[in-house]
Image (cartoon, rainbow, N blue to C red; front, top):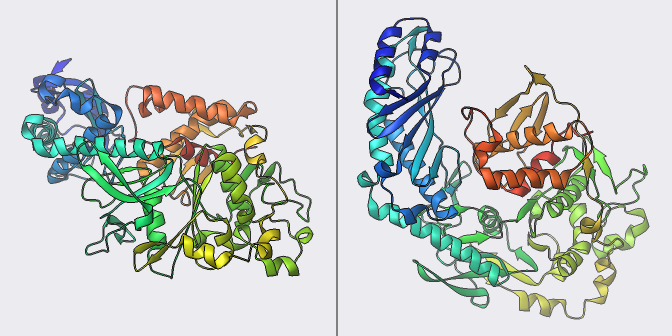
Length: 570
């Protein structure tokens, strides 16, 4: 390993040379208190920034061992350090003059959620931070003095401010770890109590705006209906009360703009931990929960949708259904089947984003258009069997049809953002009307095929390569291209960070490399990849001397959702 003095000499020797001379800087350099690794140097000042990392050894970092003694504590501490490093970096970004991206300093931008990221790794107390820097140049002539300012003036200050425990607010760091412990215990507790979700009293569910995930100022805070209120004791927060949603089918109703979708959105994001001050710190949902919606135009490959759609006029096979352009009902049927096969035990559904004919068909419509003329078996006819026989719970937001009441175990009414348990009232209204809806409740096809059907054997077309490698290009949070195919993820609504999409692009690349030569069991292949990520981390998706991208954690369900939307499946 070289000393920082040697880096200084190298910088002086290449000053005002052509930009490619920067590549001579690659390597590790020992600075006082940390090691700088110049992993990859950009080709010119207008290209993607150079990749660097700093490693602070355990003794210098000085964090108490109990702060990273478990996986969830380690993730919380790493998230906090990424935020601290990011704040420090912002003060110095673009302080060096030059063309293009000269002087840029960048690290992962964390949102309201706490995610495992490759940006910050903690290994036995050693801290590694990966970041980007735009090496300065005037035109394509090296501005070595500008880079010297970044590496010798700015970076030591950034590291000192953000990665040394002695320089951080100890009480704040401690509170981050304690919150992670409380959130972990909360999830364990709701699982023990057979709840699928919990919303603490005092939670702030509305967001600041459609483009901001920060809590809305002066919002109505959440209060549980008394009949659904449960008390949970946490290690540091102590006793908290809130609404516990039990396993089964829960209906959320109410007038427009009264908070139904806001509650569901909070439950969608309840699969993640949230930072202090977010308002949803103590909102927790089953980690397998999947948001289901219609997705017109999506590709579907070899999915059994027969529990919902049968006897199509064109005699198209719905047991092994494929299409390049799914309708609203067929796309939603595929989304349900795929989510269940991916291990989802909770389905989250908002009527506003559903295909109406997939969700419900009332008694009058059944009288006018008899079952033999309708290929769709509505979701309401299958939901009860899905729960009672296979343990798939549902939380459904609805406001247009009373037919949903007949399948509900719990009914929550949202009124001006206040929640009321109206289950007893609904049951009173339904008394004497059971026979009226009996035909409506009898599904012609068992939902069991969703679980008992043969595993999907998939084979992908050979992906286009550049210099022997499958090329990946990301387009923000909604999509990426792999080879010449675009994977559209904008309706996989529980993805909240562009770095998750990056992770999924590399997951899909790994899957394609295994599936493009022969038919492969999709479940087993995804499970092997998932086991690899669990054992070796996200960085195992990018073997090599450096990570060319930043990645954030995803779920097994997200990997399936990505594969299912790949149009390159034969």
